[in-house]
Image (tube, rainbow, N blue to C red; front, side, top):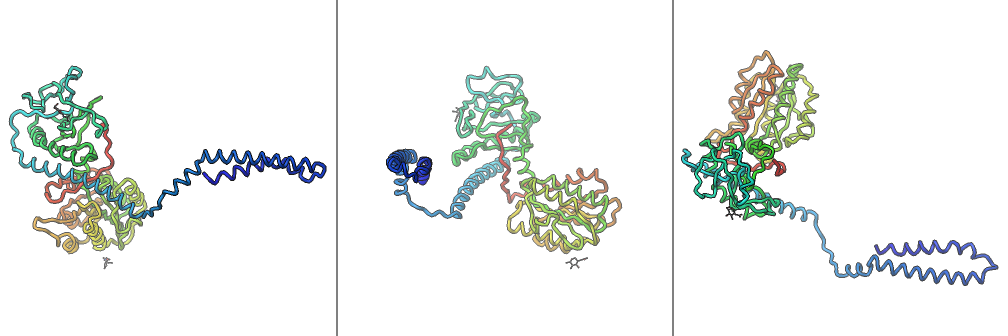
Amino acid sequence: MVPRLPTVIILVLALLTPPVLPNKYNAEAADQESIRNLVVKTWADKLGGELWNFGEHVTRRQEVQESYKTATVEPRKGAELLEDIAKDIENMMLNKISAVKRIMDAAQNMAMSAPEEFTGDYTYVNAKQLVNPGSAEAFPTNGYAYSNGNGNGETITPAMSDKPQEMVLTANKHFFNIPVNTSYSAVHVPTNVYDGAPEVMRAIKWSQDLDRIFIHNYRADPFLSWQYFGSSSGFMRQFPAMQWKQEPVDLYDCRTRSWYIEAAASPKDVLILVDNSGSMTGMRREIARHVVNNILDTLGNNDFVNILTFADDVAEVVPCFKETLVQANLANIRELKVAMEDMETNSIANFSLALTRAFDILQLYRGARLGACCNQAIMLITDGVPYNFKEIFEEYNWRSLQPEGFMPVRVFTYLIGREVADVREVKWMACANKGYYVHLSTLAEVREQVLHYVPVMARPLVLGRVDHPIIWTPVYADVT
Ligand SMILES: *[C@@H]1O[C@H](CO)[C@@H](O)[C@H](O)[C@H]1NC(C)=O
Ligand SMILES: *[C@@H]1O[C@H](CO)[C@@H](O)[C@H](O)[C@H]1NC(C)=O
């Protein structure tokens, strides 16, 4: 701001002087001239002074200068700044993780200690029936189930009742000013699930004690917003309790939401090995590509993947994804699919080389906990193997066998072609490595057959009872 002033003045003077200059060497008017010059000089001084003062006033030059006198210079290190930010974010994430872990631990204990048989009547806070006290008249009583979670003596079977449930709901700024009650969670039961069914009631009942954990989490971390518990029986507990908007119709089922699916269908590292030896031409090549595309379609953001093609040498189908697994996000999946389009076939397949490379990459990721940190699989797509390569599996997949038979990598084999000879070996590879063997001879059956691997991989981690990975899903909007 400050340095602009002189420029302004010079400009004004320059505008004023030109009419004077041509007269300067006019001898006749020399006397007059000197007077004029004087006058002009006075004008200029006056104007200049005015402008200067005006400038001082507008730019507050003095104040700015003054303010710099008290300022101190502090060196800042970019790396440190970044580290601080990273630490803050990490703490924030860790808080969320411990909140989820508390819910998980409590839920596991409750589910296990809950009585097997569900007996008697039980009422729960039904999110679809919540109303503020006094506004019950406005509530449509068109056959909604009614139950009372406030323990005022109501003992109607929930599925058979139809009255609203009263609860004090107050707008809360933590929850976007939505009226909530932070003393309770509320249950949402999808329209297609019968809440009177014994297994549903049993789970709703035991999960009621989660309120304790929800409230604790909410007090411990004020930045935590909604907490949900989704049950495989279909209902969902939401904390804090709020009214469930069901306009026009309620199609919500927590089991179809990404947060539920991604957590239930455990994350995986998938290495796809595609045989591109000389025999994999024509239809076989088409089927192989179709299999790959279908496998890729079953993967999500929490999965890691890569494709290796092999003949007498092994190569990543996308050259820059060298010796890594990449996140199965849309961009990477597209990259892999495009690269598969121009797969060339030639020479003879070297299976030992391909399998060794695949196990090495998976082992690296498992050891460094870089990938999905959960399931790992090799998908072998070929038109026949000459031999079962037992020693490779022995070395990489079985030597770490723990007492309960833990095998780090599952092997799925996809045998392609109408007339195939060596079925036995391919089948053995899959079965000996907790995988699945599929024989494919037409394009049409690919999708259906490929999907067989999903339930095998998605076997709930709960059965493992050791490691429960935390799943991060993309930002989850509070809609529907
Ligand atoms: C929750 O609802 C109950 C029953 O309606 C009420 O007594 C209580 O004050 C409410 N709590 C909060 C935090 O709003
Ligand atoms: C496969 O590759 C390995 C390592 O390069 C080599 O030792 C082996 O002889 C190859 N096998 C065949 C059948 O070409």
